Image (cartoon, rainbow, N blue to C red; front, top):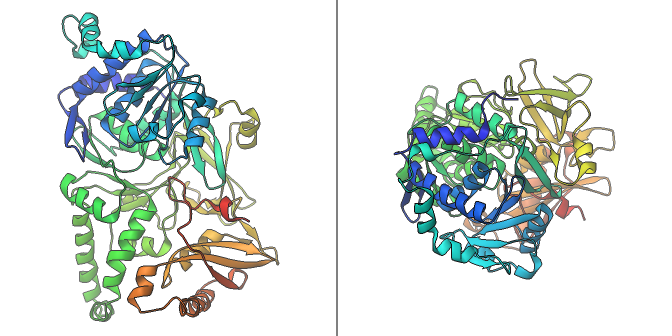
Length: 553
């Protein structure tokens, strides 16, 4: 058990950082100071008490990243209830299932989300509040939530007749072993369970972030990952709020164009991202520049190549705002070609590893110590690791982890919990990999996606896909087994196809050449026998990993 109490971290932070900016809506340019955030939280606490919300009651939350989303989340956990953040990308049927399965008694929802939900299918909810202004969308018969909210200013004056001060910031006294959050995620293997995360799980991540000085008092953070997902929540929200960071919420789809403009304006001190963002920037902006003949020739000249790479690094650093300490990549493996290039130009990046069941962090290394190809080192003192292999350093096996960050289990699902959490507390991650003596992790792929070759070889389709995705005319791919042979479903890069003047009739010929070139760069048992065109982009999880189970048919 960690020493710091999770909820009390925020009680202390709001008092200490009272007059500092806490949250800014990038689109509306509206900023809440920490003291203004504390006032909004106090008002919601009054509402919860009026509605007789008890310890252990669940309150669900769904909408885009906004200051009011953040304040609603924080109001629930500091009150002592259990927050149920839901990804806004989920289908309305899945959203309704999560609300009912979690037994939520209240819901905060974005206006566009509420329009697609059916009130009659949510019988347990006492009230639904808007994330635009905390007004009441609807309430169950017999409730007076709307009336109470309309008189909130009077209720607040009655509760704090001398005015609301730092000393009034007093939050629930709740041991770290109590459940704080239920996180339902959509994974690569289908709709998963409600992950029960305790104050210790969340606190283990936050305290590690504080001790590592990922964020610090007065630093700036541009938040563009979904906060309903564990990665963004822990390190773009919970850790910053514990130390006095100013979080600017992008609140829109993070295309490279939008992101680069925001980086230039915000100039963040730390950048968290998923691989897809870096890969798109590399593919669309850097790779075409590297393939121009004059630059290609210049990179072959000794001494000159170092200067050119230095200029590219400076341009890339400036494009990300110029003030960040490092870029932390998580959520999925980084494409090896992109990683190799960033390493070559000495770009300050690192790759971490985690999963929702660990809230989420398992391993991380500062960029100055990062080993290319790895997923960082197991977190010291917080987590420990085992690889289920006769030779963990050289032969891949399933990665097992144990420690402060490991979940309590899956909500109302002891059978599923028993499948991944053994009697000794080891979480069976479902990832295959190796680990060095110092705890550096190298991930090969998922246990469920691994293909057993005809000669008994373990084939990791993710590794083949990484190479294929770097070939001309390929936007994304998915390698699967069919009748004992490997085939690749491919969604083409139509922009590149058009720029080369390739017609739809000629595209299969071009892709056949791609297949032959790929097979020269993989082992004999990894060779692709056919490439099949796929008409649309593949469906992905919030971490931008392909939902492989949808394409097993």
